[in-house]
Amino acid sequence: MAVTSRYLTFDGQFESGVLGAFRIIRGFANLKDLAEISVPYEMEDATGGTVIGQQRKLDVQHAELIRKYLEGGEQRFLPEVILSIRCKLDEETDKNGNPIGVRSADDDKLKIGRVLKSPSIRVHRLRVERKQIESIRTDKLIRRVDGNHRLALAADLKDDPAVPTKFLASFCFVLLGPASEEADDYSESLIFHTINSTALALESEHALKLILGQPSDYDMSAESEFAFSPELHFTRLLRDGLLNLPVPTQERLGARPLTNLRAAVHGLLELDPGFAKDLPTLRTHSQTLLASLTDIVTRLEPDQPQLCKKEFFIELAARVWKSTEGQSEHNLRVNNSVAILAQIGEWLGKDGMIALRDHQSLSAQILEIFTVVRSRLPKRVFLARWYPTEKDGEEYTRGKLRLKGVQSAVDQCSAELDVSLSLVDMGTETGGTFPIHSAMYDAIASADIIVIDLTGVRPNVCVEAGYALRNHEQNRLIFMFQPTDTQKAVPFDLNTFRYEPFTDTGEIPDKLKPHISAIIRGASAGTV
Image 1 (cartoon, helix red, strand yellow):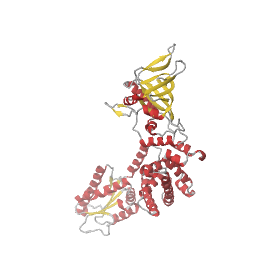
Image 2 (cartoon, rainbow, N blue to C red):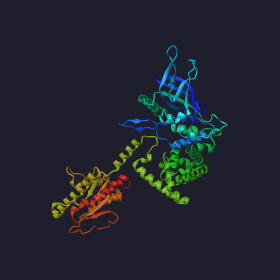
Image 3 (cartoon, rainbow, N blue to C red):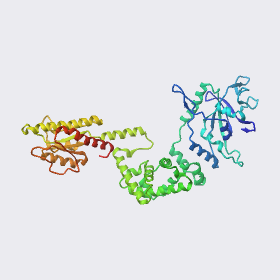
Image 4 (cartoon, one colour):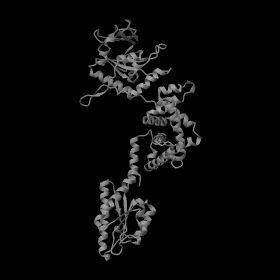
């Protein structure tokens, strides 16, 4: 590459038939010059579901990190910058008809041709007249296929007179047809897609271990690494800090892949970019976080050992700790963080979410969690009640109406909440004889919701209520009562229970439905 007052010139080796079809020029040039002559062609929606262009939106933060990296370090390396050249080119051949190069038209804004006449020397030159650059950029004649973030802030790079090659980079010009050729637009998009989707990405743990595991004699200084990537340096600080924790604390946290630390760092910097305002601030936050993590895990681990060892725990603990920021006293923040994490652990444990993995299909894990939640939803409603006979006169009719009301409440909740509830009423059992006490107790134990009709205050119903209370949480029991001529009130206090008195059996569905619905919703959320 050469620079004159009038022209920018780029020299490189020409080759045709690359990957079967492409003509290219490869060489070296200053990033600032490559940036000056080229533009990104950002992808936009066109008509009929088609698109034009191919570039993603610029990530300014990423571009800024690249700029700092290029200016700051002694060891700088960047992959090849790939640009597409869009102009009409005539092929040049040797005397046997073999292609040896290309040549642009004399009136083209882009001047491309062989540098030397010898057919064995394939060096080509792109020459751009400075006064034509604005027009070339407007017409998108030189497009950034790969390397847009490297070129985005290249104009802001500060030259170093002592190192004239500081920003020298390799380039590859892909020679395509005029900008109006849609077939070559497709070729350009195909190259972009191939570069960005088919390469085998370096596994993150491997990449982090590789860079953080180098001998300290050859590492970048802390200042240089922070300038290159605050996220990487924060990961190093956490890695080193964890390795220096007391052995019992390390054991409580379990094996900690570097990718977990990087995820925690990414989450924290996303939550509060001020963490990485400067290197001293980052160090202070890292030390505070490690000290807090030590105290939190020491107190939490006895009750939640599984949670403390999970891949996501450090980021989770860090976010919870950050949420207590308004509290100035350290121990108070630790206590509140432990309390929150303990509640989270209980909740996650109920639904199997404590087993979430970072590198497994999130969709598959969500489906598994959903299955667990669905399996926990109530399915059986047991009704403990007095079974009046025809000898009991009007109470026999009322008993059937009460049963009908309970069945209606169960059916309505099933339909409204999209659950499958069945009512278990032992008085409706038919068929051969069975041991009533054993069958009754088994039915109570296997039920999810217990409705206890205390009407008539029958001893057997009270016994069943006691057995249900022994085998189920109190908030899974619903008591109901209708006064009779002989029993005007329940003989014990039900103020702390779900209890609905009624005078008319028609009230039963509206009385019971809110309680049944609340139990179902609580079971779904893991609170009942």
